Image (tube, rainbow, N blue to C red; front, side, top):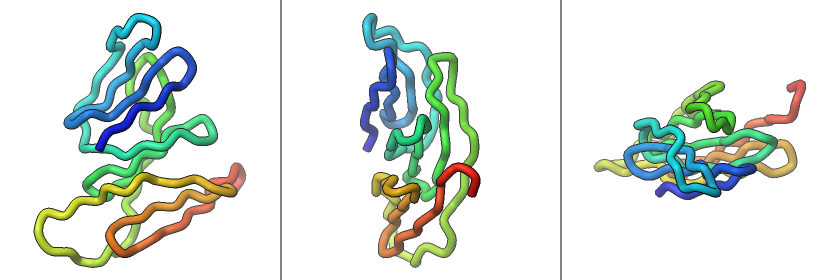
Length: 114
């Protein structure tokens, strides 16, 4: 899972079992938070993170700490057996956030003012 995104002078990344911010020029870890595995996307100045437990989190990039601005769980994913986890990366296109989980796809309008 995981992945790393560079925003300005900082790397933001998810690495089981945490997310962190690393200063690009020095490699210094500025903060680290224990969270579920996250598949992240940076768009419109924010991170959209789809956690392996199915939750979607909205975060703001900050070298000063993890700043969550909201979270939700898409409704009624189909039942699957075993310990299958949501692992798909979110997608933003034309002002819409797409979240895929198992055999379901949700679309949310994220344009300003809606």
